[in-house]
Amino acid sequence: MTVENSRRFDKRLLGIAGLALVFGIVAGAGVLYVTERGSGNAVAVACPLDESFTAAVNDNATGEVAAVRALDEPFDARAIAFTDESGKQVSIADFAGKSLLVNIWATWCVPCRAEMPALDALERQQGGGQFAVVPINVDMGDAAKPRKFYTETNLQSLPLYHDGTLATFNDLKSQGVTLGLPVSLIVGPDGCAKGVITGPAEWASPDAIRLIEAVKREGAAGA
Picture (cartoon, rainbow, N blue to C red):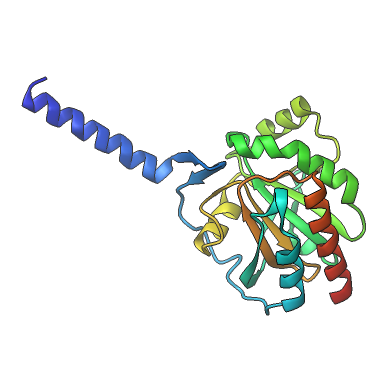
């Protein structure tokens, strides 16, 4: 290779690397790191620290859910918006009074896909008046791909929610909550996000059930 050709090759590599930094994803440690700009201030409002809730999360985040941590700075998640399966606009505010596990995922994210059956099982076992799993798909465009994935994977208990703009992920990223997918938030009945895990977890495990039951108790006590 001549010096001139080598320079051209290096420039092409730099161009590809630059595009990867702007638009790409990098896999590592069970997380897909996505590089996008923040899109707004939907999660910018702080919530007061709930020490009892913090203790419940940290004391029960063990084993299969050991990566879950209480947020040092809880934030108001009620403005996070998306659409339901019929295309109706909804938001976290519509789930007031319930403790939530809000999971942000995409069909192109391998660790996201892997944990969806466990989330389906968690919703089947624990979902109801006090708790719900809220999975928000962030595939760009319409909901055709996540709908097909639900059918192929036989997900029966999880509702299908979709944000085709990536705004949900971008807002969380802009606040320093996550750099990649999947990311799950533990949200109290007041709409405040109080816990987080970046990366997948075995949500149908006894460890996860124990954590969610502790979250439900704290939510009911503070309601």
